[in-house]
Length: 90
Image 1 (cartoon, rainbow, N blue to C red):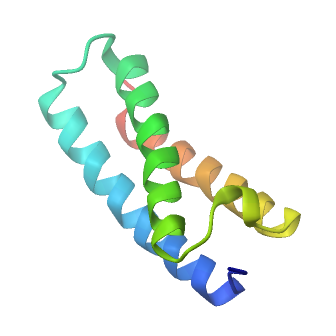
Image 2 (image 1 turned 90 degrees about the vertical axis):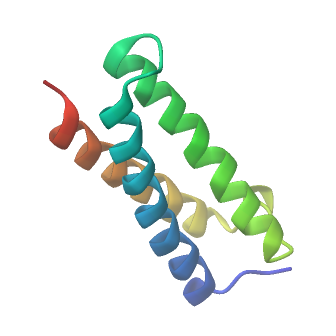
């Protein structure tokens, strides 16, 4: 299925909230080995998994996205993780 820009924006907005909530929980508990870098690695993996699951629910995949949409995903991922780094890196 070809995903529209609007659908992708909705997925990315949901993913923003999901990742920030997960980051809050992960940094509050810090039960992940490796300190900040361990949590960051966990969050990066979760971003990829959650994105793919959300796309699959729309009968799509990261591999089916046009290059402009893939770039949008990459940029959003960078913004999310820059924000997380600013909030939690001490």
